[in-house]
Image (cartoon, rainbow, N blue to C red; front, side, top):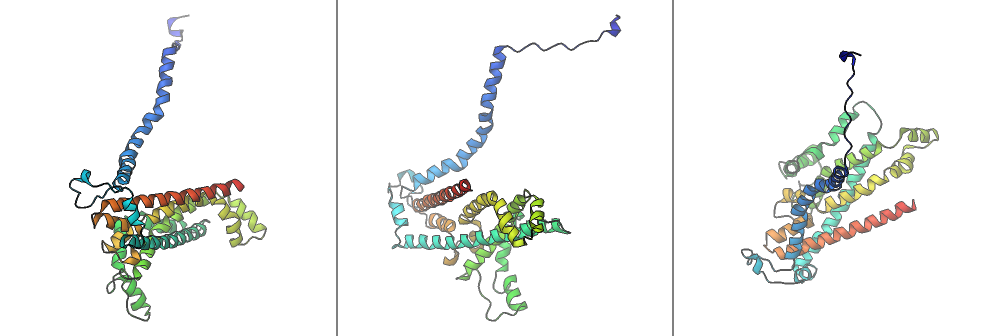
Length: 324
C-alpha cells in the first residue's frame, strides 16, 4: 500500500488520570456556589443588611437631634413599638387609621384587578380577528413608566381642567358641582382607580399565560355535553388556574399593600387622610418628622404583619392542595 493510500486515524486521547478527574469534580462542586455568589452578595447589600439596620434603629430614639451623631442616640428598647401601638395617642391613632385605609384599599384593588384580569383573559382566550391588538392594548398600563402614568392621572383628576370632571359633568351633565378628587374623602376613590388601572394588566397577563396550558379539547367536550360558558368557567377554568391564582393573589396582595408610588405621586407630601396608605404614612413619619426610630418600628411591624398573612395564606393553600 502506497503512502497516499494510507488513512490517517486520529490519535486517541490519553485517559485522564485520577488527579484530573478529582480536579474536575471539585470545579463542578463549587461552580453552582460561584454562580450564585453575585446574586447573594447583592441581596445582602440591597435587602438583608438595610433590613437588619432598620430593625436595629427601631430600638433607639433616633430623631433629628441625634441625626448628626446617630451612634449617640439613646436606647429605647420597645419604646417606639409601644408608642406606635398606643391607639389612644396621636401616633397610634394615625397608624391605625392608615392601616384600615390600606386594608380597604388592598381588598378593592386586588379584587377588581383580579376580576378584570380574569374577564380579559377568558374573553381573549379564543382566536378572533384583532385579538393580538387587544392583548397589546390591555398591557399598555403595565408597560408605561409608573411615574409618568400616575402624573397623567393627576392632571386628569384636576377639578376645573381635568378630563374626569369634563367627561362626567360637561359631557354627561351629571348633577352637582365638580368635586375635588385629590383632597377629602374623594382621594380614596382616586387612588383606588389609579391602582386598579396599574395592577389589572399584570393579573391579565398571568391568567392569560395560565390559560394557554388548558387544552381546548376539554372545553369542546364540555360544550358537547351541554355545559354553558359560566359552567365551563367554574368547573374547568378556575380549577385549572388554581396554581396560578395561588401565587398571583399573594403577589398582588404584597405589592398593593406596600404601594408607595401611587399616593406619593398623586398627593405629594400632604396626603389626605382618605389616601394615607401605610407605606406612605411610614415614609412621612420618618422623613417629615425626622423620627427614624418610630418609622423603623412601624416598618418592622408592617414586615411582621405581611409575613404573618403570607404564612397563614400559604398554610391554608397547601392544606387545600393536599386534600384535593
